[in-house]
Amino acid sequence: MSIDVNNESGTEVDEQAILDIARYALARMRIHPLSELSVIVVDEDAMEQLHIQWMDLPGPTDVMSFPMDELRPPGKDDEEPPQGLLGDIVLCPEVATKQGADAPTQHSMDEELQLLTVHGVLHLLGYDHEEPDEKAEMFGLQAAIVDGWRAEQGLTGPSPAPTVS
Image 1: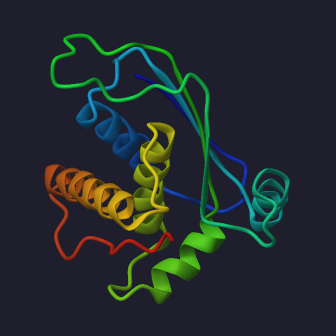
Image 2: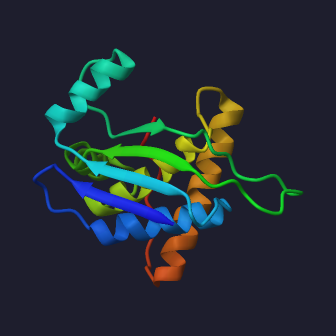
């Protein structure tokens, strides 16, 4: 798996954890090991510009996903998943800090960025949360991936509750 993490935010973030959880999520979703992903960490101003340009919504947001080859997890009968360019995930640590502090189970900026990375990966793979059934599926899968990764890392305590809307 080729995953690039580029921090342009000016905020120190745990880039290794972002890389590791992205790799874990993609492996768990059975994405081809030669697929490529880019994660970019930006400040609030850059995220706000992207949010306005691509979503026509004001203010910065927590995570945005820009799919490239529209890869999907292989079905149960598929033996070999296709390889390709997954796309870009853009994260904003300033928004992540606020969301982590406001979450029911308060958590750090880095824990929120890990959750948002998984959220972004799932969006790149075609998952959405517009409808209640879609939201239940996506957030359930997101929690399972984050919990699995945290267990593999030997991390204790409650997993971050989903804060993305």
